[in-house]
Image (cartoon, rainbow, N blue to C red; front, side, top):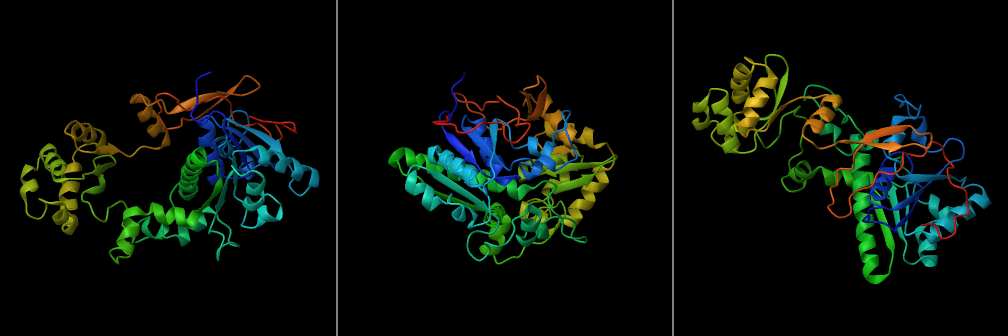
Length: 381
């Protein structure tokens, strides 16, 4: 079997839905042994989040973040099951949970108790709003997108605030969680000492606002919805062509000059209204009118091909099927097939991390049912 980056690592995953399971799947892909603790009978909430379902009748939502894991069914309200969970935690390298703050402490599975008994443990908690004033608030992605400002900068300026088309805050929090866990493990490698890792969805979103966040924190500007336009770059938006829209992402003056050359307006690159990016941002409405007039004369695919050949970032607006097809054409191998116990397989999105010596593994499909494992598992690895 090929060497993996996180080979002997043991991860006990109490998390449900998306952020925590996404983080633990990334660790599992990189070689960690992940045991997912689920409620008896129903399991993770996302097992029932459908449609859509795959060919085996499994909810595709659950499938998306639970490969390379095994599952055990434990009712943490039952003393014997709780004792088994604690026994697993005492042998684990990493514990991940996304209960509301205080729940794990009441169960005797909080970081202070577990670290006292297992000093090398990395204990990761994912919450919606932290363990302080927001401890009692439920952390659902839509809610975080709303109160965290993301919806205020997403959508048409004349329309209502919009959420992003995927639970992006959960994904971001899962990424931050995996980075925090790996940093804590690196510290443990040097010192032998474990620690707490705390991730909350609201802070994750605020950090991910990047330039929009610093517009407020450093510049005193409160960003607003701009549709598909960019607050600091032009043209950086969708422009209608003869059939449908073309995405233009012109990031510098050289690319703008090439754009003008390709569409037959070379003189525009020297126009003082458009010669520099700040000038183009100031005069974006006039520039937009010129682009619409010329790009509207040909189909988007033709413009995309000509502009890409000239080094101008441009492309058609794909649906999800088109996006996967593009990745296939580019040789990115975007999907993997994972075997199920019944001999069938499930096709899932590939882990995007490329490692030359210890690449991600793809060994098992997400567990079909909660309770795949039989306990106890002494010395699980």
